[in-house]
Image 1: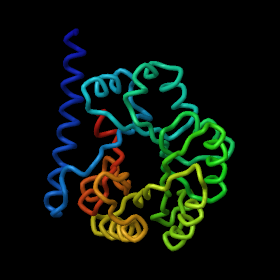
Image 2: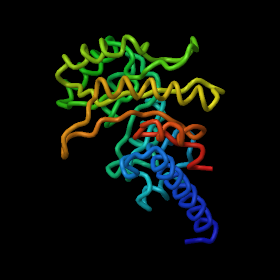
Image 3: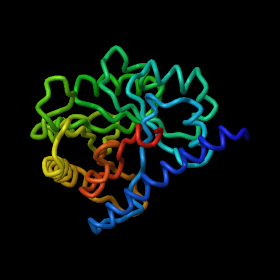
Image 4: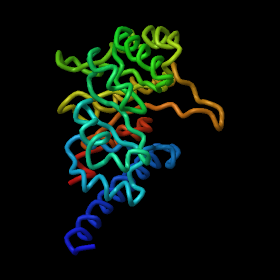
Length: 240
């Protein structure tokens, strides 16, 4: 391997080790299981070669993409297609109904359900494909008019509706913290999401399916995992 490639591999693995170390430390300070967190690598802006390096090193097992077309271009028809079987691919962006069919065909999980309308559309395409798709509901954790998600007080109602759909398997909640929030504000928001998650997804029996609370990104993942997130979504810090 050329020197430049070795240097880049070393840098990426160092980033990964730093992030996982910080996650373990944050969980430890919170008195939580340090092995219970799964890192979701956000590959939206990452170079395909960087993603390949981390997959081949065993560092990336779960990845997330925000746009259906971009994901298909990389993971179905592009450079990452040969490595696709080694990765659990999550959709983490806002999903429109006209993209539901392609999303059901492309992703293993869809993490950003925010209405029964989109859930029903995904369910329809999942049934046609003979699939049951694990999904997560996106909670709206801020007052931004442009932020997607279901209001916290409506989350349980939407969850009950989704549980009536035969080809979807609800497995947790995703949330995006308010921009520029202080650590105290982040802790409060994450704590609120954790209470909703604990209410609706109680601890499963050993060997059962894992449910996820997906909070935290590159700027706030330590606070998120300390609060109980077990699927932080990290991109820029990992691929720096």
